Each structure stands twice: as C-alpha cells, then as structure tokens.
Image (cartoon, rainbow, N blue to C red; front, side, top):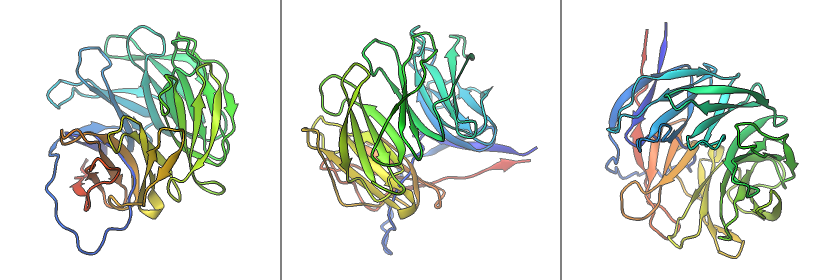
Length: 343
C-alpha cells in the first residue's frame, strides 16, 4: 500500500506566489533545516497550527484532499509530533480554520469540503480528539476559502466564506458549535482568498477579499460595523490575478497590509495600508515559480515581517525577507522539498 509523507520543516509552512527569476541567481543560505517527515493520508494540501490542548505547545492539523480526511498531530514541544490521528471529512477538503466555536476555551476545527460544497465543524473533546457535530453547513455554490472572527460583537465566532464565481457569505455562530443560515454579501468581482483583521484600527473586524478571474481584479475590503453589517470599499489594485492573500505589516507602521499571489503569472504583490481606508499597491515581485500559498512571520528575529511561499512547479518553499519598507529581499532563499513514498 502506497503511503504519502508530508515533509515538515522547522518552519512548518505552506504558501503560494512569485515572478520569473532573472537568469543569474545568487545562492542564499538556508534559514530552515529539514527535521523529519511525517506520514499523512492521500494528498496533504493545507495545514494550520494551533494549541488545541492548552499546554502552550503548538499542534498541527493537515487536510488530506485525496483521502477525505484531516490528520491531527499533537506537538511534543521540541519540533516533533506524535503520530497522526485521522478524522473523516467530506469529499475533497481544501481548507481549515481553528477557533473556539462552542465557547469552552478550547480550539475547534472547521473543514471546507470543495466537492461536497459543505463545511463541517469538529468540536474539541479536550482529550486529544475531535467530535463532528450533526449540522452540515451549506454556504452555497463553489465555496473555495474561509476565515473566522466575531463579526457582530456578540462574543461568538462566526464564519466568512468566499464563493468562487459569485459572492461572499457569512454564517453567524450560536456559541455552541452550530451556525445560522448563510447571509450573502455582494462583492465587485469573483472572490478567491479571504483574510480578516482590523484594517482601519476602529476595534471592529474587517474582511479582505481577493478578486480574480474575469471582471474586477484586486482586493476589496468589507469594513466591519461591529453588528454583522459591512461597508464595501472600492477594489484596490493587488496584482493581475490574486488567488491568495495574507495579512502582514510590511513597513512596521502598526497597520496591517497585504501580500497577494498571482500564481499563474509567477507574481507577488504588496498592498500598503495608508491608514485612511485606502491602499496602494507596489511593483510586483518574485519569490519562486507558480507561488501557491503564502504565510507571514518574522523568521529571522529582526523585528521585520518575512514571507514564506510554496512554489508548485519548483517543488520548493521560498523565503523572502522583509526590509521593513514594503519590499523584500531578492533572490529568495530556496528550501527544496524531498518527496518520499514507501510501498
């Protein structure tokens, strides 16, 4: 029986984005070292980290798109993990979120099943396991990404979901792991990636939606009013086909900016927050070929936010170090994946 292995580096990232690199490339030293590999189910494609048992040690959850499941790995605190526990999902799970959906102080898991067009909630049992609730959430046609937050100020976690060719829907949490019926919100293009945060520092959670495909392309902000209602912004330039988006303070001014990836164009784009509910995009830059997912963190401890990008055609993860002015170092630092399979 063929087994698949997910390669875990000390960084534990997954990402997307980039432009074609120039012919001459200076070799940069690696930042992360490969520690070891861990067994998953078929086609591991999306992962998150969180402290699910409140021991101040990060755990790992990986969605297995081909295996109709997700794998949970309890962290040991030294960069290693216990063997996976596998939980069944719907067909073609592609996205995960972690949040306390039933207000018991423990993080739960939400899974978006692309083929079934459903979302399933798995409540934390506090015993290193998860229990699927009976409600099967049906946000609408072709859900592709989701995020969580308290959008109406009632202290309960809600969900926001992008529907690939149409709109965005919000499902308000009831505080017991169950959710209300989806509420549709129009956007000015075809939504792809979505992130949430307080982008105008008014204490209310906003939603940033990447738009790609036909029609308008860029990033649109849904400014939260704190009561479950939103004010729609114009579409800000954010790359030619932004499929993924990450929140990041690129210039250390205390305001959250964005980096988007247009993977088919091998390009990343920085969108700088002006602090007045407007954004400016900088020149596209590269971090490997066919960037697919992007995450942001300070990987070097210098106080500046960096990005890690998963490059689909390179079979690599690239690191671009932040300069603190909205730009990143080039060439990126390549971390090649070693793909292994055993019979």
